[in-house]
Image 1: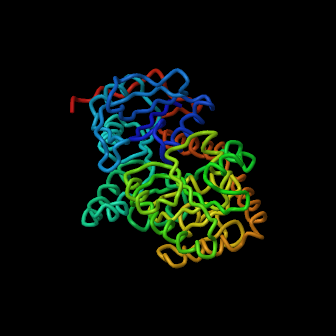
Image 2: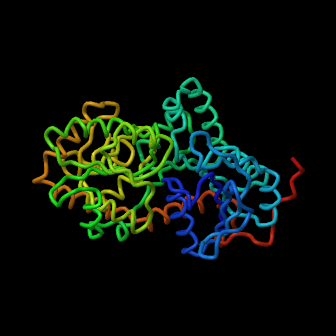
Length: 398
């Protein structure tokens, strides 16, 4: 197949959506498909194709900074460019990963040309708005998202609970596309004593780790204040915060006792995971939370609300500790129980690692490939190969 992916974020951006899309796009290329990615270009720079090491051809379009997220950009509408390009290349399917102006124009262009479009529900934007003091925009955002997604042939969501929830909210033909984890990269064997010493943690000191954006919607004051309260019983406990975001400066001022590392990638990130003991994830806005699986693969004891990835994979008191969504006191108690269960950490860590080991990206890419192939079926002959000799009729200039 020829597949076009349209997104507002892609590596080198550091977030769960970018990581997921890189895995999916590179996985398709490894299976012999042609993949092109449309995404906003950086604030300063030309419009180059992807560097030679990239598995996909990358097209960068103009964008504007995303409010409160200066390092991320929102792609501007490019319907005319997409129409012209796709008339020439004739992709078999379009995957629209984000619902901004660029994504919406991609859905419109695909519909105009009769190209099957599949969308991904990666972000709970209506829930984010409450954290930025814009709750009155929630109903508008919900209506907008529903309209964009229902203009595609199907919407892919990462957990069964979210598939069911979107269906109840009026999203049509929602299908499951889970997430995987690289268990070779994220492994307990990456633990480094010298890294722990740099955090001020001795061999026996419990280290509580968070990895992700440092942003209001991540609910980080709950985790940090909870750990501060528990220091009476665990005076040697350390908090390590990996990531960047708009809330870092204020949180670093409020919680100077925590170690703030900034963004980490690759092997360095894997070492940070494995060198900690407990992973706390207080977010209630994530559609999945790749970091939960990465922490479990690294042999950490996860503590999170029982939703998204934690709701799917963390079994309370077996391979981690969970709290009912919205129950802040229960999350504090879950963190307390995790710290008090040191004698059981080896068994909990082993169970967490075993759970994560069953979530390979290969299986997820295979599922993604099948969903795209099914969507493109009307454009493909009986033999299963895409038609290369035909192109849609030219569209009128929008």
